[in-house]
Length: 212
Image (cartoon, rainbow, N blue to C red; front, top):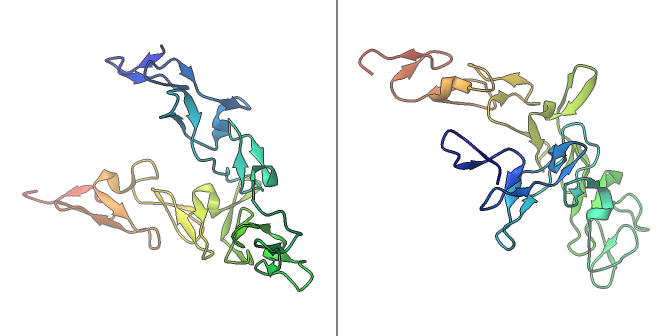
């Protein structure tokens, strides 16, 4: 197999399995297209991509495939084959945001699940009918939803990754995104302030208290 670590007790990057000999699925030169985490299948013991998630620059929210390389409605497999804008066993219920003729479902910014009637919103869209928009921030020449450092919630609010804060997750926490609050505190995603563990103080939790 392909091992790593000082004691050769972990799989090398890009390999999984009990013997670290199962190569992770790749697409575009990246493991799981960069949209998923490679894990070991409990059923087969082989390497596989876990739940696929969109990249900050992706227009589609739905991604699937062996290497998380496919996007859009191809990833959907509904029981009921209803006309656009309708859902349910009889296909008579209107999807969120849809007009009487079925047009405008999910505000034109998502796909209606014909089994449940729930909207699957495009990246950056939110709320029940996908009419909401999560904050975005410009990084270089591109604008990213939640600055690429968080995920758009169903309430139009960004859920920031650890180490980032702000409405659009565009600001680094004190101490830096890699080691926020110097590892001895918790960064508040709303205020950017560190809540230090006992024995530490300072804006970045980098000041040991006298006596511990």
